[in-house]
Length: 254
Image (spheres, rainbow, N blue to C red):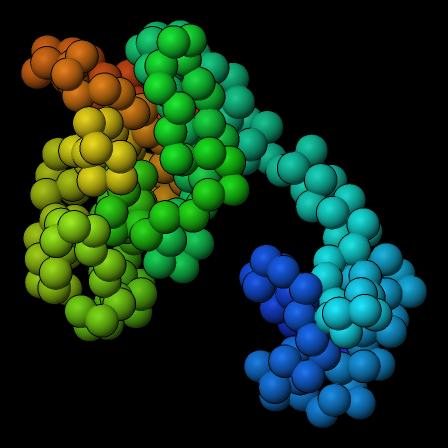
């Protein structure tokens, strides 16, 4: 970015507005990014002219413009992971009769990029675009377990980085490491009603050719409908789906 500071600053402005979820005053942008107000106003003027930002003069705020939406839509059309995964996820839903979803790690969260709903199954909170704490989800635990330990430590250096819900979830980094070790030993992660009461999930990480977790494939199901035998079948189906997607991404068969 040293050779193009203005480009980096413009992207920082767009990223801040996108994260806020609502229009932001220029003064707040300057404060949060540590930039001079004159620089921020210059960047905003260019971004407004190009359509990436819209100015709301009555509110004296700035929000994302139509060009930003079109750029995001183009990503959705072109994103290789989603394109390659769609058929795999369709097959997983057909094979299990349950809702399936694909998530990626985004910092300490998971971001859901595909949700394939099975007919007659309950709607879930894991819709496309939803973020949830990785340590509370099967998809997140599956991916974290496949990360290098040093990266997990960087993400969760101490207990203040952890999130619990209703007193559940890892309360310490020691407990998190134990949970991730259990996931590695099983080869899959489970979640038992922590995200949505009564709904369980099983997930497996999708690994690329470097054994890096690029995504997590999961199936969610009403817990009353799944006994031990059915749960084992779901694990096999999710494992097969994660392996199939990994091969589509260039991972060789092991």
